[in-house]
Amino acid sequence: MSFKLNDYNPAAKPIRILSRHELLRFLHSLISHSDNMIRDTLLFSLLLSTGCRISEITELKVSDINFEDEMITLLKTKNKIQRVIVLRKGFGALLRKYQSIIELKDNECLFPGVAKNIPITRQVASNLFKKYLLLANLPDLRIHSLRHSFATHMRDEGMDLLTLMELLGHQKLQTTLNYTQPHYTRNAHIRIKEHEEFYRKFRSRK
Image (cartoon, rainbow, N blue to C red):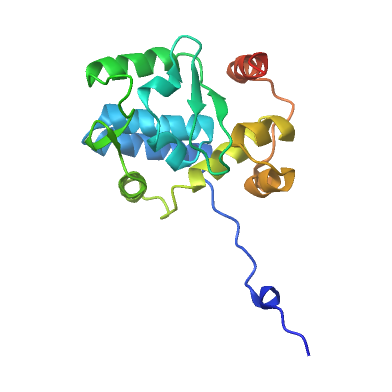
């Protein structure tokens, strides 16, 4: 008689993502109710536009940002492999302005918590996410769903899986496939100017 515990594990449920309309509702809720709108807008805009893990964003220091080339170097990642993230056009100037407004030094955290050399915690960011979801009358989700939302929407807009895999920092293609929900995939042949610029910049740094 043989017994394998894995045979009795429940099947993993797909993580629910936010549709484009729901993302707009979420951002409207954030803008309407945030007590620190500049920080919160940048924090969630980075999560939504890069697909980074929450820890990768909260652990950022000002020195990790290349403002001119609009890139971020991720030194602390889940798989311990350093990688470079390309920002959307205009983000370098926004982050430079943000740094100036709250007077951050190069060795200080981009999103400080109780002190400028201590990052905001994942729990604080998660609580903010849940707060804005609730106020927008959206389902209660884990903050990691933003990473899945990014992956699904980028795939929806025609990004090839290998590029998406590198953006997400995955080592296996199957992991990236697990992040995209095929019932959202449509408009595969539509070319969007902003994304063409994003792909060009991303590929030029290889």
